[in-house]
Length: 312
Image 1 (cartoon, rainbow, N blue to C red):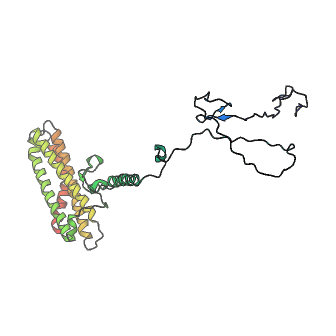
Image 2: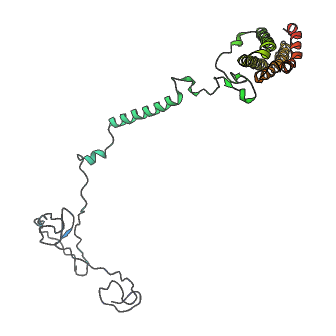
Image 3: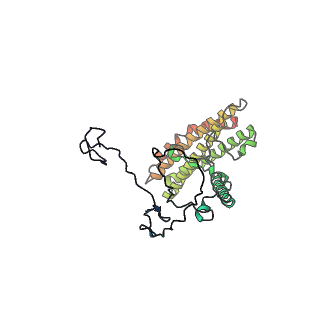
């Protein structure tokens, strides 16, 4: 042989050139005459072997040859020059596909209607459960975000409680919505009158209990004065919510705001006087200072009394 790459002479049948190590792409023909294949593992079994040396399966003996009919065929000429190669039939050693009755074939089939019904029921349960969890039909207030619990605003510089925010959408009906403007304004004037009377009582108690009472009595007087101040602040908030858009009652609303401001200033002076009384170890000795602190609200009390009857 001559190497196709370097042209060196190499031994016949060489797969690689010993000079340049180039592959020679030579092939070897194997004769399959008389060979059989094992029906169990597909291994090539030599002629005359009855048991497969690989898996031990019995190799079926060759059947009788096919009958040959004696036909008078014309000669086709010299066949010596033809390259006639017998190609043996090679059967696959891969096992055949599962039969339709095997478990594997049953799994490969289209799902039965029962499987479709079960999947649809499961999807309905999951989707329905999620919808119920989101909507809460048994508790309509679960997703409500508006404030419904009065908030303590005493630590934010505003004494008392705020029951609802101004401008907030409230589902509950406003009790004053069915009242006329005159009724609402009259109601606020009456509330101011009651708070003024409570302030008068606190001032009267200050001149007696505030300068001579026990520590418990003076502490109770301080709580009462602070309660009046808180109620006045809450009333001012409600009066501010009335607004002045109604021109027929704008003046009345302004009078309410003025009266409530005077009353709150008076209550602040009373609360300060009661704080001195409650903190004093000898209120009788500090009586002048205590009463002087309350006297700071006298002008506001006078203005309130002079104008309340006319404005109301």
